[in-house]
Amino acid sequence: MKQTFTLLFCMLVYLGATAQEFDAETFKTDIVSLYEVGKSSFKTLKEGESFETVNGARHYKSTMQLHGAKSVYISEDEEKSHTYIAHFTFKNVRNPQEKMTEFVNLIAEATAEHGFAVGRGTDIKYLGYQKQTIEFPADNIDDMGKHPSFTVGMIADGNPMSFEIQVSEILWK
Image (cartoon, rainbow, N blue to C red; front, side, top):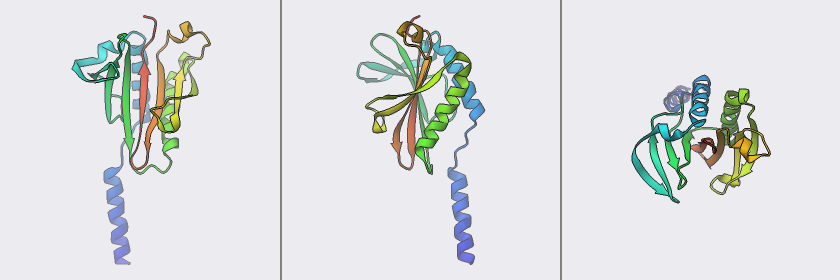
């Protein structure tokens, strides 16, 4: 009995130490801020020199940290378009897909007043080639290009699980 209690106590201490604090309201406030900056350009969030080049894109540190993200950076492609990219990692998640969907729903709530809708798409860089999008629903690319858009895709579904959020600035400036 004493050993069981000790083991249980140690597990609770371990889980408490590894638990990640996350405030949904702070996250949604950050999403609204990203939306506002994305209406002009993420160029204003770039900090310092580029630190990596991938497929012709340069990566820069960001002056804005999305709440809960493990890492963030701004990607600039050859056409000087910018994308804000945030990586999230969570340990001890029973259902990684549900966790990712939780974030998609938080983004959808934060952008609801702009008429954004949740959709699905494919992208080879995500597990199962699946991604979820939160964007302005329009058949016309000119209408869609007047709004920032969000993409969420899972990178790893183990322990820890990880996913990324990409926010693309408007196309037509």
